[in-house]
Image (cartoon, rainbow, N blue to C red; front, side, top):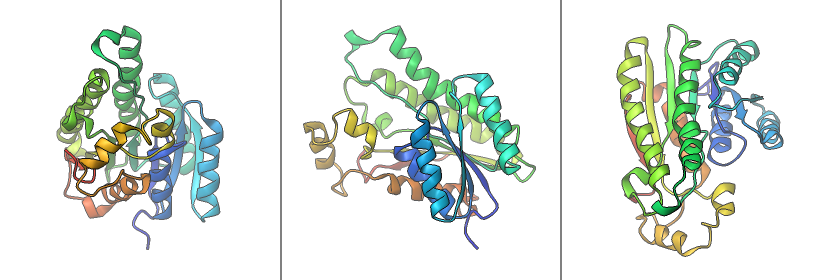
Length: 249
C-alpha cells in the first residue's frame, strides 16, 4: 500500500516549481491531489496531465489564496471532487528583492497578502473540512529567515511570519489531531529562479559555494520531505521548522 493511499491533498501554487514537484510526489504515493493555481491555468493542467499519465488522480482548481471567497470555493470544490481534505500544502508565494530605498507599500502588501494572509486563509479553509482523524498542514517557508541576505527585508519578513504561524497553529490545532510543520528550502532551481536571473549568476555561485552539499536544491528534494510530513511516518512531529537547504544556514 502506498504511503498516502486514500488521502486528499491540496497544494496551493502548484502549477510549477516546488509546488508542482510536491503535487506529483504526493500523487505518486497514492494521494488524490488538487492543483491550485491563481492564473497559470495551462501549467496547472499540465501538472494534472502528468499525474494522470502516471496513474494518479488530480484536478486543477483556480483560486487566489488571498481572496476569502475564492479560497472558500477552492475547498468546497475539493470536497465535491474528492470527498475530503487530509493534507494542505501552503506553497503559494511571491517574492521581490530590493534595497530599503526601493520598498513600497504595494510591494509590501503584495508579498504579505500572498505569503502570509494567503497561508492563513487557506489553513482556515482546510481545517473546516478535516475529519475527526485530523490531518497534516505543511507550510513552505524559506531558509532566508536564517540567511537574512541584504535587499530581502519584505520577503524575509513574510517567511519569518510563516515560521511563527507554524509554531502557533501546531499548538492551536494539536488537540484536533492536525499537525502543522514547515519546510524551509534553500535556493531551489525552478522556473521562478531562472526567470529572476538567479541561475547562472554570481549569487548562485555564492550560494552553492557556501552549501555543504555543493549544489542547488531541486523540486524533488523538497517533495520528498513533504511526502514524509504528509504521511503517518511523521505522526509525532508538529511545530517543526525543517531547514531543507543542503546544509546552508
